[in-house]
Figure 1 (cartoon, rainbow, N blue to C red):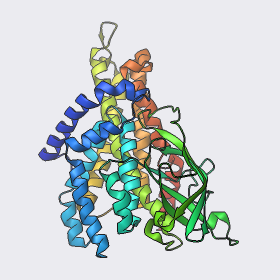
Figure 2: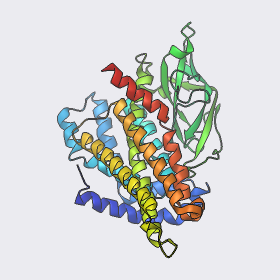
Figure 3: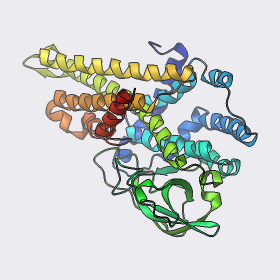
Figure 4: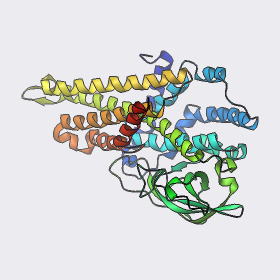
Length: 410
């Protein structure tokens, strides 16, 4: 794949019109944290029929799970088609990130991580209880793995515990930097099994639970104040003797010792691949704003775009745009072939895209000079938003270790 198809371009243009009508007028409210993004996402779902598509997809997945069926290679290829499914998922992400990357983060965590985990690991009853409402965005989801003392060491350093008590589990601990945490109706929580053995905490089995808003002992903080992504509410979760039945344990079984760990790692791949699409949208917007400014801004009687140092900045931005776009296209092609990225490949994709987005955004601020430091020119917001790409879903440093370990193990 080397360019968008005509059908994909039509979808892109329709999404752009929606964003201009429904997102752009509310940028200030979103940026100041006065407007949670969820109603906008719901309207987008309804406008493009994404909610109905989610219902149809849910029905098929539920039927397959009930009948114990595994997706065949032929079914996977039919679903993948020409990469359309992956492209149609990524196009709204790219377009939203021209203006408001935080909306994508809030939407992606609810639909991709929270709903996705439940649909993969849950029983049919759990899928019906929680999955459909999340997939249609009737309810907001959060995915809670990070803790105050275990950011990059999320699995090994986890201290949140789940202790058996008869037919129930008692959960204690707290999670932080949780996207949608303040407003989530449904939260997927990872916890270490405390079975009373001498197994070191670091090596204990990881279990996955689903908690509902309002469960006794489960507290959700107010939104944090952050450097960027103000349209994506982030908070902290506190679990104090939260008592839940086995029906809240995904799969309703403790399963294999590596089950929860493998689930989390699988989600890392999805999250990191999606971030490249976010980076592409942000880079495209920074480049567009910079080109327009370089044409219009006059110094010493001529546009600053006539200056070679400005041209160098624009050229590097275009190189970054092409490279990240090619990574996104490769992901679409793999999806079309029914294949997925390895953890190392997703990490490489995320590492480059995140660094490129941050560098392009900061160069855009520099190109705008004093105006770039002012909120009204928008590159200031995009620069603040871009920085988190190098932090969440695994820091740059963590991506390096995943890539290098894979190379050395070959």
